[in-house]
Length: 259
Image (cartoon, rainbow, N blue to C red; front, top):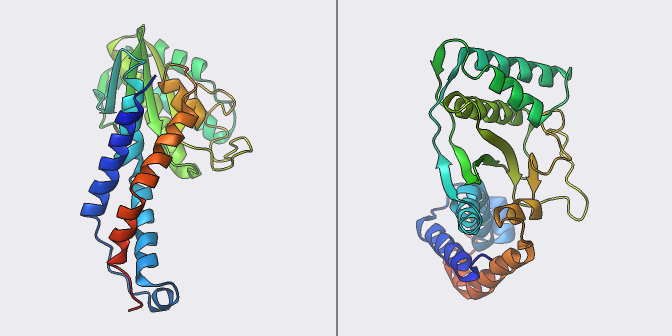
């Protein structure tokens, strides 16, 4: 079971650091400001700013803390070697072209095996690769996980998919027998209580395969080794919110006024 105290300490520290470093971007919005007040506009700006880096500032740190008790190795912002074979790169390009054209259905197992088959054939090439948000090892299985916003767009997601296949290619270049899993994680389901159904992901991921797309409780419980910890995690966020409420209110009072 993860430590609630450790999670809450991460949240308190992250939120306080954000408030200390936050500086609203200059933006003259006289109608909005006079209607709603400078403090509310500042709060709106603060929330928007927090949303843009919630993944790295909070979700990744919380994920690391939870996973430490269930996995043999846990790393954030994992840098891959960027080395793969030319034939594997060509195979990844074919996979992406077929997925984009709709001439094949996404299938993690088949895609990985196709890349594995070509993992050491052709000349060695090097690519600059985006870091994996979370890298995990458990019982010799390697997990590369990308944390995404709740509603990713299609153009961006196609690039994410290619990046992940290239991650697999570089892992398999180093070890063609590696058991490597790549997945997208979305920290919460914005359509709750309905199932997550984001059309931009369809055709790129096996939507029904929870090992490929982990949403909300599926993601957090996976990090905990299968324990049902999602509600406990939400309680940590709620507890910190209550504890810092007056501190947050006092912080935004400095922006009060109509001018």
